[in-house]
Image 1: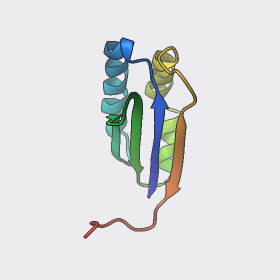
Image 2: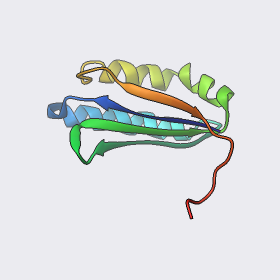
Image 3: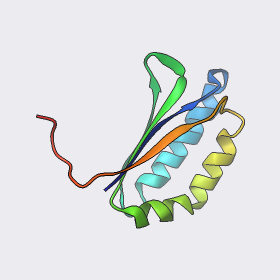
Length: 100
């Protein structure tokens, strides 16, 4: 299982554009083979930061996503909304289960 987690600083004065872009890419991505979760949220301590969380079955599924037209479209739509350097990390997880 591959986990992607990170943050993207954004311009909150353009929320309508941002939300339209994230909702479109999320819907398309969740339909992809191998995608278990694909979520965006705003950081509670910094509303100008979008948090990203993705869960993929394997590296091949993630690689296919990276080549998708909807991800390219998303990147072009948010290019003018990003205000700094994104911090996105990839984790290779071997086990998943409840915390307790």
